[in-house]
Length: 209
Ligand SMILES: [Zn+2]
Image (cartoon, rainbow, N blue to C red; front, side):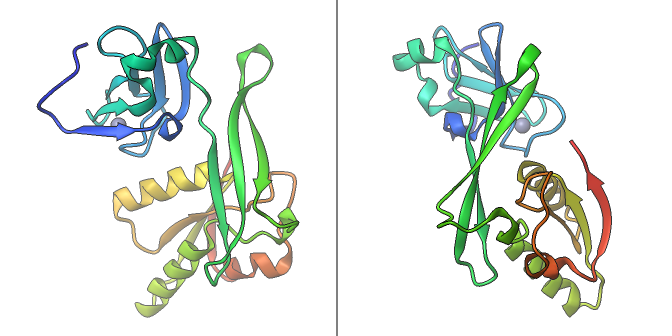
C-alpha cells in the first residue's frame, strides 16, 4: 500500500488504537475513528514505505500512526505496545476522584485479558468511585426530565464497553438512552451513595463480556 496523498488522513497515536494485535506484519485494531465494532477493521502496515499508514475497511478512514513512522519502524516491527487507556472517575462537581487504568494483556493460550489499576485516587476506595460516566448520566437525566421523558440506562460491564456503547448511542442519535457502568470491577459494587444517581431509572440490560 502506498501512502495516500489526496484523501483526509486521521493522525493517531499508538495508544489511540483499540485492542491492537500484530498479525502478518500488520497491526489490526478496532477502529477509533468510527468507534470500533465487532471486528478489527483497522489495518496498519508495520513495514516498508507504508509503515505507519493504515486503512479502515469499515468506515474507509485513512490513518497515520504517529509513532509508527518509517523512521522508527524498527521499534514498530518488534511489536505494537498494548494500548493503555485511562478512564477518568469524575464526581458530580467535575472533580477527579481517580483514573482507572486498563492495559490489554495476553493470558494463557493467547486469550486476551486485561490489567486494571487506579492512579491519582488519593486513597479513595473503588467502592467510593462514582458511576461511569457520572456527568454524562446527570446530563442525560436533566435532558430527559426537561422533555418529560424517562431516561433509559444500559448497564455495561467495564468502562471500555460503556464508552463503546455510548459512541454507538451518539452515532445512532438515540436520545434518552445512556450507557453507564460501575468502576469497581466485576467483583465489586459501588457504595449506596455513589450508585444513587442511577436509582429510579429504567435499566434495560446488563451487557456482559
Ligand atoms: Zn473505521
